[in-house]
Length: 358
Image (cartoon, rainbow, N blue to C red; front, side, top):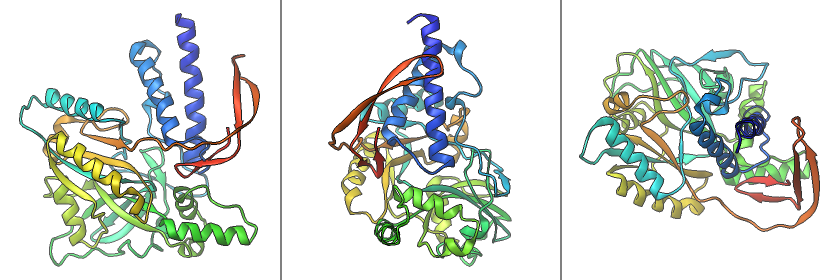
């Protein structure tokens, strides 16, 4: 491709990704699967890696997510809530492991934690002297929406942390995933359909919509739940690893997913990922992969972060789900740059919880 063609391709990819991010993060109405979004994102990453002079600060590769909606106060995260890079196969996981060994100049196998990747809404809970002070969405990773009142309606979120077994830091920021159980989601959609109301596309959208209700009483009617998975800012913390943090969360009364393992070396990680994939159909909630992290906080600090993601963690996604449908017609779209793109209009079908029409 010529420089002009590359520039145009990069511009088109950014426009597509920005639109899909807006639908996903702001409207809670995604129209493509996660696998398709990941494909577009990786294509843009590859082009920008080949042509670094075309990278701009507003590229989707240089940010985390969408901006907060109006109607809620904004909250600044003491530590950024970063996104994760993705791995799609075993070789990419081994490449991730090899990069860390080179970066940290270590030969011995790393100790990793692997946790199921919940398909819900990421939130941060801030506890001051053990009391829930602020709860917010991830937003753009730097600032999120203050949804404290709505989060307080979730019974599995403690309003006060337990400190009998382990002292609670004066300030403790924890990250978790709010989700809608699949059985409850199915019941909700059946009720909405009977009432002539629009149904939700998937449990993640239902959870997001529930958390963004301006009236907490409406949120309280939804059977939302949460698993806490990460430590943000912590004042005078003595925790030294991810596994130790998860154990502390449980002692403090926070809900932690039991599908978490400590693995020595990347091959154990790959084996654990295969086990999680087998369990996927039996779980009462949606998952779309696993999250792998260096267990040691000291090694995490040494590895550092990029602009949008940590070097010490990665999301190992499950294979894309495939379904069969029929093409109803082909329409032609003309982009702002004059590019003509044929679009297939499909008989609606759900793939990975998302209804695909085009």
